Amino acid sequence: MLILAIETSCDDTACSVLKITGNKKPKFKILSNVVSSQIKIHKPYGGVVPTLAAREHIKNLPVVFRRTLREAKVKIEKIDYIAVTQGPGLIIALWAGVNFARDIAQKYGKKIIPTNHIAGHIFSNFIENPAEMNPVRSRAHAKSASPKDRGVATSNGVKFPMLNIVVSGGHTELILMKKMGSYEILGSTRDDAAGEAFDKFAKMLGLGYPGGPIVSKLARKGDPTLYPLPRPMIASKDYDFSFSGLKTAALYFFKKHPWVAEKKFLLHFCASFEQAIVDVIVSKTIRAAKEYKVKTVALSGGVSANQKLRHQLETAVKKELPKTRFLAPDRKFTTDNATMIAVAAYFNRKKATSWKNLDADANLELI
Image 1 (cartoon, rainbow, N blue to C red):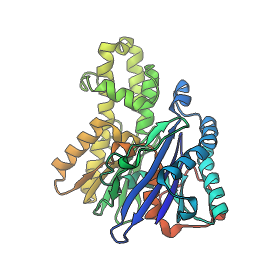
Image 2: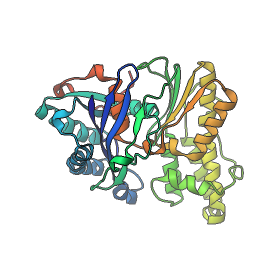
Image 3: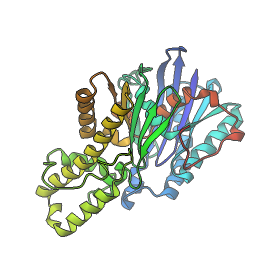
Image 4: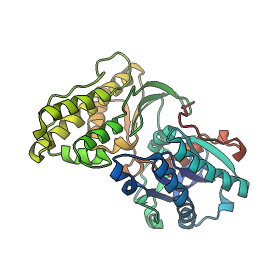
């Protein structure tokens, strides 16, 4: 089976071709994975501008699509299914990908598998050992990894119940899977997501965009205990998150102590901010994992690339839940990409439909 996947939920234009063999124990071979990033376009604004993102998707999709098929050495006629991100995301960006998928499906008589973006992040943990597969992240003329670098991936042998903590620029959610395709939202963010908080913190200090990687890099040399910042909702009985208060507390501290932006103090300020976010996520994830007696804890989303979060969550799982398996995707698959959409689509292929029935949904829920 061959699945062509398209992802345009935010500011990355991505396509991938995935070959699946086997049934009960599927094996995935990544034939191509192309990502065209818009970071340079949105950087001056300190965040993603939806209209600009949609414009770039429309311009980049034909280029990325052709290169994806060429690198996969596959003709569109041989594709069995087209998978596309239906939501959640920026509605104007989603429609760019959905319309492109509809046009291809109509022209070549293909069925479409509408795919949830959050499910894609979850299923990035079902890709094991993707070898040297490197999605190329350039503005428009993206190049896929060479054939020898693409790697073969296999289903990751996940055991259920599985607890997923999805952490990205727009989402911070604890999602329980009791079995394949069964989702229960245990908690989500009430305001700013973790990735959004990182971006706003970085913008406040004039560090640049995207903020997460910049703050994390500076934090590595800082003392996370030096500046007292709150851990919002860490003791609440529910599993919801809130990072707006942390951002506000950091802003007030910065206004009161402007010298904290100087290089010798900035490292410690970044470390303290990062540690506050990590503490909340780790605490709530471990508590939920214990309550629901899960067999797998999985971390995913763009912020899952954060080294401190990965290390401290894995350490906590091993210490507090020694019989529970910890998973985190290869860093190449933490940010938005179409390979994770293709994997999620494979496990949701029974919902394949005609292009006539496909639309975009900015608030699409996991069902």
